[in-house]
Length: 221
Image (tube, rainbow, N blue to C red):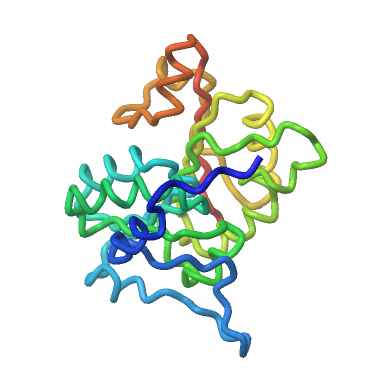
């Protein structure tokens, strides 16, 4: 079912354009030229770049950007109804180190230069439980190939999910596609990990007594 457009959405998005890289469903000019973003120009510095894919309403992105002002963050979300709330919070907080890309993860290698990202966060991505939709999972090979291109050598992907089948799929996919699993736990909140930022979805799952699966995968080129 298609999400109903929020009232005054266009006006709200326009008001947030200063924190958005743009809405680029397929960021390629008609001539075929790739539209790579000038990240240093956008942020005004050459600080390390981290990326959250599927930022939702932005609790994680806004919190981590506040905690780490020395790191630049780009939060990705393709749904305008959802991302607008995240962008409004960023503007309210006045965070100079957080910007948004409103588009699909499939095109990230057209937006970001090779070897430009140090860390990627995948927080509670849709698990697409039916096998026939496996190619849409954000840890499928077709996405991992994109991440490998934009990540530096030694760059890291951090994934959290409540779905065990999706987690096991991800573990296998990382192993098979050039990543080294540096840390894996089937119960994040009873592990040695510190500084975890609890997202909206995560809070819901915790209140239901569900375990949170967590991994860190390192890009090896």
